[in-house]
Length: 335
Picture 1: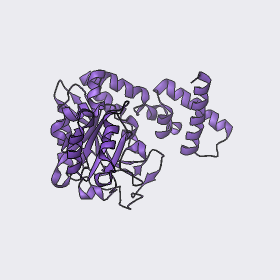
Picture 2: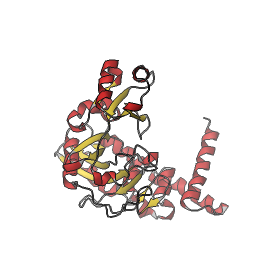
Picture 3: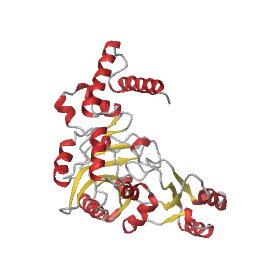
Picture 4: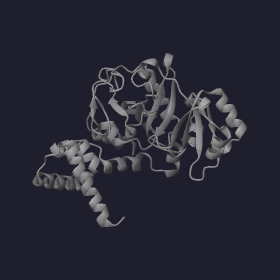
């Protein structure tokens, strides 16, 4: 992609974001003003185009803009807290993660790249529904749901997955979540994202943010960048204290598929959930910044879906507040 093409794409994307967040009927002069203001926000605060619009930088003064973790500040966090590429790989590779957190998974799974057809048949026989995942997949990409009694040819499917050239697959049994969470969007597992920072010097786990992630449009995953809906969880009370929101800047008081109220929803077993995340953080001290995706089941059982060493900074701050001050305070002590 040439420089001219890149610039053309960025300008086109910028104008599209103006229409989504500010409105279609903007004069050329106002569009130029926003473009210049964005350029300054990029230079001074390290804001990406997404940061600029999602956080409302176009209507904030200097002090307001300073409150937010921007694209540049996020990478600063990564360099300080998770500097080792080798250690980050434990979180990014689902196979490595499942092995490291075997005691936290709470589900049956199989490594399809290192199994035979009999292993796969035995696994399928035990489960009505399975999820097949690319070990390097992210944001729900590379995940496929199968009802096992609808698989036409098990051997053909196995060969396809086992011999894949550009992917390595695992298969996991379908999970069952607490009924109160399932009712929000029963077509997906609706997870709790808890972001922690671990100070390995003092053995302290800091809770930076928590969000409820809900599927939408009857999708089988709850990922925010796959049309999912997020909402802020008050760390102290475990109660949703924001509207639901999606990546398209739509907001929801109730879930659009089920009509279940989002604001005021109480996360069950919240204190126990935090303790579970705290225990997980201590299990991988070499990666100090992680966003944990947790499933809450009936009777207060918990399991991990994954741990994200690069948990999105925007997801934590939308319809909440800028969190840079909180992170900066912790960084002073644990650098």
